[in-house]
Image (cartoon, rainbow, N blue to C red; front, side, top):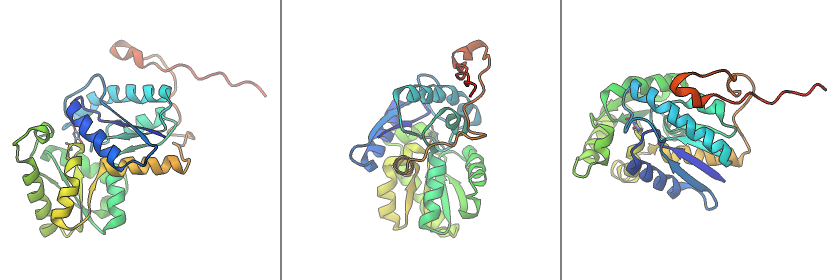
Length: 252
Ligand code: 2AL
């Protein structure tokens, strides 16, 4: 089985960290292909960043379809481009916020999300609502750490995230923590040991969910909304995204 983990930002040090995390939980025999798009922002922490990350992400899905990839994880907590990616892919596509929230709902009663910047809090709530997870979500908290600070040695990011997780447990009435950024994947085990509650990282959860879906022989439903997008002219800079017309159906 080949699973492609797409870090939709273009910071390859983060992509390598995400790939290592996915490999550490994948079963023997599962190949993890961890990539960043060839174009897009260095980090994703605004709606603008998300929008600009999506074309490169979709290129990686389209390439994955040609390469015979079995399933995909979108490794950014805003789950950018998730539904468009599902339209392009045959196999399952799971976003890390989607994966982490669902898994957290299975091991606790209420989770708090601990994320990067305050400006991303609204998007996390929006996703919780969209996924039907709002009733499990006690709170969404920000550490005011920029995504690229997570990569910077000496940023004290780990300590600040742990402090925010402790405040979540003290103040939110939650029993589970969801880490709100793919760049936090390497901190999950450490934070879980310190706090003594389930701490869910979406990269690990997403990798194992996609692996399970592929093993269950479940792919993305192509009936209705997630069918391949209709072919049409696409102009300007995005011309390369024009899809081939589907093969003509033969009359019976
Ligand atoms: C993220 C993430 O997971 N990767 C990225 O660039 N931005 N999400 C976030 N809430 O900061």
